[in-house]
Image (tube, rainbow, N blue to C red; front, top):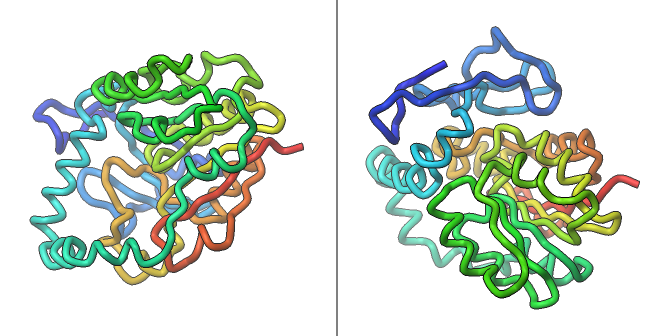
Length: 279
């Protein structure tokens, strides 16, 4: 399947996927109100999970739809199509500092046992830099440019960066290898998120800790802003999680999700969950 690309003149190779929560193929499920041509967002007819049905082939994410390109393109689009919202957001950034914000890397530093830690979708490696010295940092990043930038943060600390999809990159490590895993602003991007969590469950040590941060589709702001909500980013965000759907995906992968109360409030556009292997 091919569709015109927003980030390049050449057609973008696409593939159709079943619902990543319940495997319903949704062949006749209509596109919902969060869609924007050529990207269709549907609510699964089986379980209600909101997701993009047709997603770019993995190879397209290396260069053509690499995050650093689509992020810049989306910023331009929002400024053009939502000028008032963009202006208000820029003028009220101070609001983000009103309440303490806990990042996944801080939870790993505080709660994970000493050992190797992997950052899935590590980007340019900024969060690896913030890991305590007692951890050996590893990362997986599909963008070739960002993976090269991240390498400098693990040089000299014994780890390395794998430039590949998370599913393939993670599979190359031994089972029971990692003491911790960072999935910050990552799981909403990966069309194979369910498969990645299943592999991650095997790669974590029995006492391993994974920390997930994703946009909260169940937030009050999403209900108000609807298609203008900041968490709707096409084609970057292919999965739209609520606490219930994230817990269901984790459970199916052999992981138990816990949502710290103050880090998963319905008033916040994001939520944080900790995952551990199911006993």
